[in-house]
Image 1: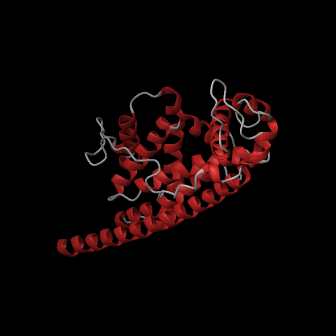
Image 2: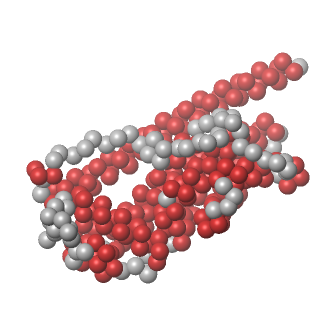
Image 3: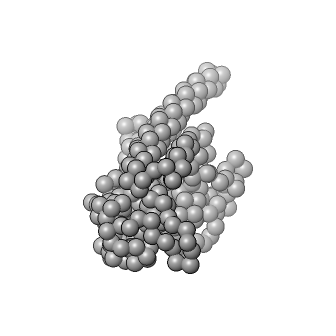
Length: 283
């Protein structure tokens, strides 16, 4: 059943190829119709396979939806996390905004899935939980900035939610309008977030360090070794290996995220030391 010949071709799909095909088709359907509006029948018909083939790979519609959502969340988190590894604070904000807008440009279907559905079937959380994860990474940046300005750093988590929520909502709006361009939108976002309404720059622009920034969506994820040739594995073994590789990929992503947090911590310590040095010189 699994090795069904493709129309117009004698080549047969391996279990891995079929799985990826079903994920791609489901991703497009979920983006267009949402979880509730998409059926297993539609997924199977679009892939030109029977429903049991879909069930064999993912168990149910909830299973394939969870895979799609998890991939999109990991991709976006990877891009934003990499952007937040920059310094100083304003550059972090610029690059984080650019990373989100780049993700929307390159993965419009994925972003639509994340923002349109808050379905329990995702198994990895909702868009709100994704925002919270990003906000947690922003808290330390805002806490340090607050200390330097004489503000109470205890309010950093609240400001992080405000800041990330603002950027995310602008991203939802820009998803459809796509005007102005990515860098111009990011410049205005940073203008409001950094300067406030009372100090808006009439002609905001992105810094030279962030201009034309393109973040590879998988740059923070090391390559996973390719599995053995498909001819040596049964379809069941392929599916088991794919699941093992996905678990390995998640572990590698977690390890890389931890490494980035350590780098961020070191950068903050350097910034603090430099700030103390400047204060001492001023005295």
